[in-house]
Image: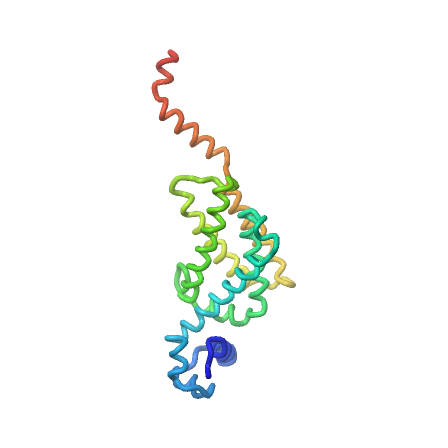
Amino acid sequence: MATTESIQKAYIDFVLTEGGQPKSVYVFAKQNEMAEEEFYKHFGSFDAVEQSVWVDLVSKTLTEIRAQEVWAQYSAREKGLSFFYSFFELLKSNRSFAVYSIKKQRGFGTPKVLEPTKELFENFAESILAEGIETSELSDRKFFSKRYKDALWVQFGFVLNFWINDNSAGFEKTDEAIEKGLNVTFDLFQRSPIDNLFEYGKFLAKNGGLKEKMGF
């Protein structure tokens, strides 16, 4: 009997061997000695199979990093870095599929194959960002704080494309891109002189008559 995992494995083997998706579910099922209805018990299409592979990679990464004894002591920045390093380490064993899957996508914005992954990633991002704001590690900026997760997703997309085109030994350049990119992003999330300027502006707005009262 077919399982989610067996269908994923057979699909990956097919697309990497043939360079594209099977012509039909019927043909795919016949080649893998399963009834067509068995496929549809698990997936509605080949695109759904591909999406599930990416979701499983992110889910496995999250399970592994959250199981670390030091996880609870990590800052939001450290949790973000831990996810990125762990995810791309895991992705190495699935590089051929990842390259195939991403390179065949067209257009701008989030690739269709990563849409379910984006939701899972953003849930994770929101949780660590909320912790960072609660502990004052990150600045709680009106309107902008809700967009922090979008900045992390942009970093995810950037690093993924960087990794796909990285020819360095052990993908060491990707590790460098993660370190620099995530640190710059989290630096922007932290309190800065601009935040102090905004606070000062709010103070002046609330005390608009102060200047006149002091005779300046």
